[in-house]
Length: 397
Image (cartoon, rainbow, N blue to C red; front, side, top):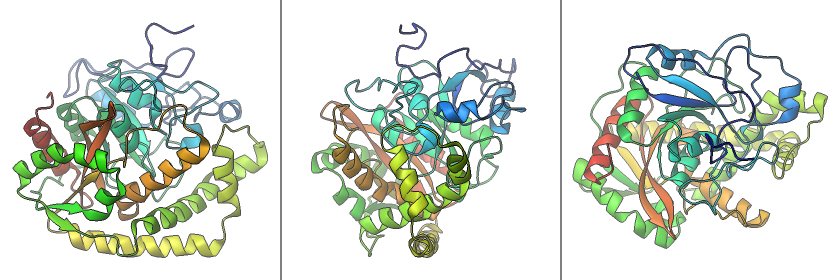
């Protein structure tokens, strides 16, 4: 039976993990949910998988970033669903149910922070915590037509969060408006990083990677960004080809995923849903040389991006190459979408960059986001920029 308080199936089933916010503060009277990989004292952190929940005790403490939000006045409304062990981009979870995409109910919500995105898009909360390793905030934000941020790597405290790829993992968040996205950042992000930004650079490989119709739909959004930062400049950032970004990211991340979770998987032999089992088996069997190549490639990309963005330049490109795949998409189609999508999300992932996605277009009746990406530790300035671009594009504050 559908829970009338959760018509999109965004929350974990069962009693809600709730915490009342402080009576005053910069986030007073706002409600949020947290992806079920963040600890809340007294509750089992389920990490999207029943066997994980079965083999782990209730959390002894609450993740510091949740406590920071509560101290700022926001109230935790519950835990939201995640893809199993955060290793997937569609948002499918066969154990607890796949959340409905409020913006396109016939399509996937995106993962792995699927429940958080659905809760914000459906108006159930004002903002929501997710995590982003390979695109798990940016892609569901694009698919569900909301704002999302992947902060610079290391900018937000991940204590009390289940890991996947520690040198890629970030704690991000969603909001229905750029103003709320920024206000949350003012609580969670370190001070500084608010220097001016510009010029605007169009990443040609990412625009070509997108469906032509989706890229065309995003042109008015790009024009809004240009009215704020000035005319954009065409730029190539992937001379190796954008597919090399996916392949090397995949290998580097997979090696870390198995190092982080392989011992538990080997000892427990958990049941996994479609695709998750295969990804962990591939991670287990990955040749060490491929993992090493991925790490070398990441170092090269980091040096390239830091140099390019050191003066405040901002990259602009489609967050996802297309709207969310339909729920009827077969595994081969889903894998093709995954590869095309992660080829672009890997730009910020490999570079350790901050990225905000704005809901600036629709194609075939479903949302597609525009990403703005800045150099490491320019998160606060990027959030201010996103708010200006959103206002210029006529999005609600």
